[in-house]
Image (tube, rainbow, N blue to C red; front, side, top):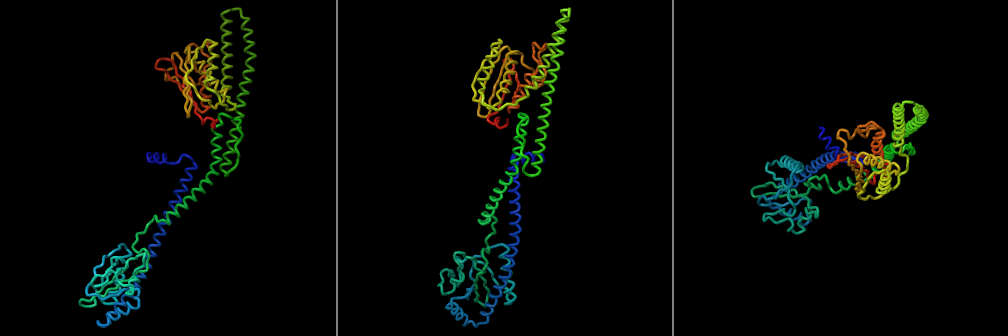
Length: 490
């Protein structure tokens, strides 16, 4: 069951609008098929009832004609037939033959069975005979006399025009019965039923046209209606994607259906509460920083007054570490603050600027490759790359940066020549205040916030950061940023 569900979900449209349209189409097609089935059943039942009544009436007429010819003396039968031909004939073509004329019987199905059974039953009952041949023939193959003359070859005044209804050419009903030794009465007539033996076609031209018009109408109305309903949901989806990047975005319009309006109202309230909590967090950290600076400064002054040099040095080192922890916490808060506009920046130009700054501090950075301008938040983008390059230069002495650009994404790979990071520790180093450098001195290893801030910025820009060890040694940091979708996701 799960396997079939997975296969079904793979074929379903991905969007809510597409699924709504699919449901509408399936519903309309199902309703049409059901209505066609009911309508066809009723039409066939009605046709069979009409055919039953019509065939019985024609059978009684044929029985009357046969009874009339049977009552005539043999020498008068041809005279009556000649008079009928001179008058133009009737709806029956009647002839008296010396033998039974072979007929290429056609047709099948319940309609033919009903007509043949009615004729045999009525003729047998009315004429008190057992041998009645009831068959259907095409007009072009029907033979009517002893010499097997085709109906089409008879003169028009002989009445064959009453059986030829071109271009329809309906099947002709032929009844033959024996009047006496070497005497057969031959009667041909038409049943005024269109398409008597034509198989019923579900997909006729009229039905296809009607179905197509209904489907196009449903698709058009469904797209218009569903578009107006799903538009607020699309706005809500975009706002949810932007929530982590821009808390100061304008609130959603609380319009549309009641459920959608209620959802937009709840989202606006959530955004406002998150903004208040973030502002409160920033105020809290600012207050803590401000409040801690005074006692730290006071303690440092008192430490300088200690007589024991060793204790004074240890005391000052602890105060420096505490100061770095406070500054690192504030840096973490500010690093997650990306309230700036999106602009086009040159990735290589940013890297060259950072490389020049690191070169003044003794770091070596080499650049390879070029990239087209990228729409990002400039300061956040620069800080992300700065943290990664500083780590690479600090732990690996030098950094090699490779840019690989494509229409879909920009890839920046930073390789150092340090000891690398074990695979089990690669995700752990992104956590705040985590350092793998063995000494616990903040002067040698930083605060352990750089990678975490860099990854947060990269993800806020729509990309990500991954770590891996180079086969020749050193750590490789891959920064992948999408384009051009990153413009709309910020």
